[in-house]
Image (tube, rainbow over all chains, first blue to last red; front, side, top):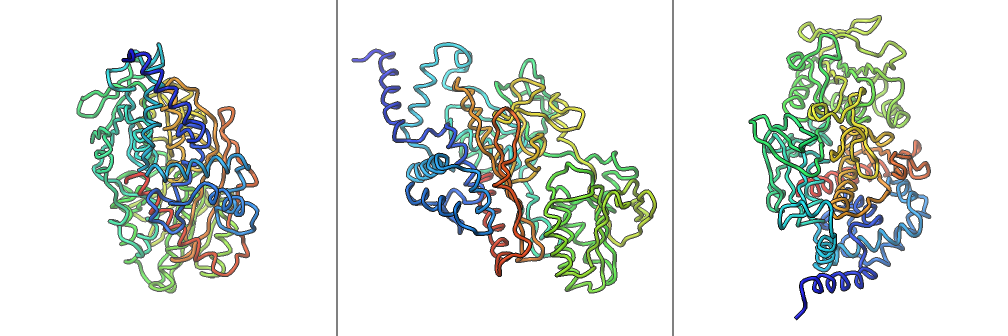
Length: 100
Length: 424
């Protein structure tokens, strides 16, 4: 049987192995992604919902929006985010939806 | 509200357990620390839910005097008779369900040394970190002749509730050729485009119900949010029904006589049928008691953690904080709350808080079903708020067909989304 300290260490190692695939909910891009729900909602009930969309699709949509010449608030705001940020935000949004 | 994968919670718990010394060792058993939030508006109510969902092991207490909250965004539609006040009302049931300790009481004082909040009934709430989200206090005494009593004749309607309904009743009761004066205080104040949206929606109401009525904005300032769009919209929709007088053109109201319905500028006296007097503002009073407000009446904060630069372990989010160029808006309050919640959980876990990017958008109605927007994004590196120029701006002046209607629908979507996230 494992000693308590070893248990803690094991849980920590398991968690860090999963951190490679799972975005950190306390990470920098998670903080950016947190902003999205202010308009787009959490439950998928609003019209401009991001609910149930995978990370790759979200990333492609955000990049397309950024290169587009539309006139909504989002067309302006998306220009604040570079490619890395967009990828991180997409992953954070998609992982939260899976978790729901 | 969000639910994070079980493995993330385990990871977080493991991180706590692995922290050998320091902050965690002093915590009560089973709790990662005590987070206390004062103020249940868009900032405080969001922060409580978000922090609890990120860190279920955190003891989260929300102190709010009122049993329900009346939201200001969309309340100009109530004044114009397009919406009912009850649609602005939100409760705190979801906070209780989430395991947040809800204390309905008025926070009266903060002992920053011993980390204790004292309530009006004498009860005391201890904290490890405190978040103050008190919103704005109206400075009635900063405008000669105005008072809380005076607001019964000249409503401010700048905190939603009976004041909103009073202004609506006055508008509906005024003569067909009545004059409405809106007095705008010096910036900064809550909701920078609010007075101008109000003028627009009042004009829209009058176009139907009071065809000869006029709306005059007496402004303490020389420019305002979305100015070109508002002025174009007024010209096109309302002709000269809406007039705006800038501060340097004798627009600043310096004294009012509520019972006599008179407003005075340096050179003129106005006797309108309806006077909407929006007084100067400052951070909510508890911020002053806690020593986190500076001489401006607002609260300087570090942009990464929203921790006060004047008192350690006290954070300030929402309208009360100095986050310029971020405006004092519900959108900004909600966005700041989430960033602050992440920073707080990192601090409780012994992790370094990280800078990020914050965003804001404010929609304003030119008429029911027609809206314009202003957006901004802000870097928080280095402790301040830096506007990102390419991400900031307004709806275009020559807008494509249908954009104003789309933006009105976005505005309603936004309201639904933000109130769901804030109140559940």
